[in-house]
Image (cartoon, rainbow over all chains, first blue to last red; front, side):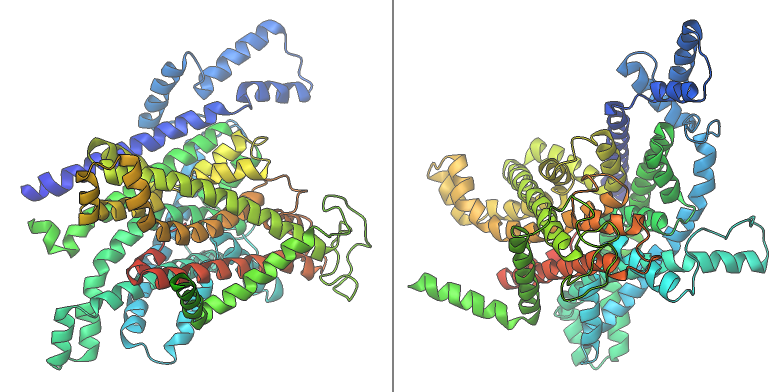
Length: 334
Length: 294
């Protein structure tokens, strides 16, 4: 009972507050836009050469305002925003009218989720094991890994993605330049399609893996170095426990806890990095439609993407917080 | 006399670290480039001043681009402008981080809780999307080094404020601070004389990290066509122009490679300086180098 009261409920409250603040921020920002989406739509009609009489124009403005949730005072709009959010209806996309934003998001989300979850979990596991081994043994040849990580670590996602694109698509054309499954193909369950998906996802995944591993490897090594000097490790060593055993069940096991905290703190950055990577490789995920939305000033779509992103990131962090007690008995029995 | 010795030993210790030496040399080269930019024979924003598309040669050390600009002289401006943005960002975000960190740590209570919640929110949010939205909204406003720097500063104080806060929390319980409080020292003076000196090492190392982050953000925003006007050379706009004008397809590799290599050297140099400095200043501060994922 005390676990629920002291751990679970504060976490849930924090989750609700953070999500609420984030979504409110999202509501406020686009309303500062100097670009009036309604006026923009009207000019678009006029450039098509459609004659619109003043009465009709009034009617159109009213309808569009209703469509984009720009009716009434700011407070009314805010209430409407939450209604839309809870009903999961972000209205139609401006650039691909009249496709609803939901549909675009639903089409893009699986791509991003697939790429992001696989690379995040994989890079975390690789970094924890590699960082544990390198941090513990510190052999001479491992210094090369160290220097390599020190070089990769500060380079942002965009540059890494660009280097991979240039290297493996232009200079050595092993992988396709971009896209999700190739031109003119439809999603279906056969070997050819799956191979194609893997081929297209390799470079974006590689980018996310390399950057993710470099980030977490550093943290892991430092954590290992501090655990190494703890009494239980020194005791195990003097007692003659097998080195492999020490690394895996004494050091890595203990380092996993701070590493989960790290992952939670970095997740916002990892998510943003995934979006940028998708843009570079024109991978058909959230990042790609975000790029389109930015280029065409698609108001509703940006709103939808921002909402989805905030909820996705805060929920992932909550999820990490909730699995924490499974790894740490101190949290469970406090 | 003692002071001279400590400075000497500081420099001596730092130069024993190969990372610091390498980074120092790279930074010196970049500073030289910045100085050279003041003697540039060309206006960086004007086009077709030299023959276009020439490969690197003695006359044009890094070749010329398709727009008839000398890539080397463009680079000198790009480095200068990117560093200006980075310095503005780092300066303002340090100010915010120090004020908020000390306030939260020293005041405690409700102030602390409110500030920590706001900080946690900005940390957890996918800041990139919000940054993109704001730079779209304020497109004309961010078209200026100073304003862009301030905008970036507002997105990068949270993690460092948190580190400063935890430092201040532990300092507050130390005896010398208690003595100062009991002897009736005014709060402002306590903060300035007792707390600030202990916080400064963190401020300094995070300053460099923050510069690196700002340069990366500028490059990312330039890729999206946001931030600085594309005709003003920064590392980001240089790279974006080369990509947008299909430098690689036309075989002008020097045009594309220059900003990429420059960016990588700059990131590595800044990171290595911050790592070796923070290890020197406080071995326990190694944990900072874990850094906040940006």
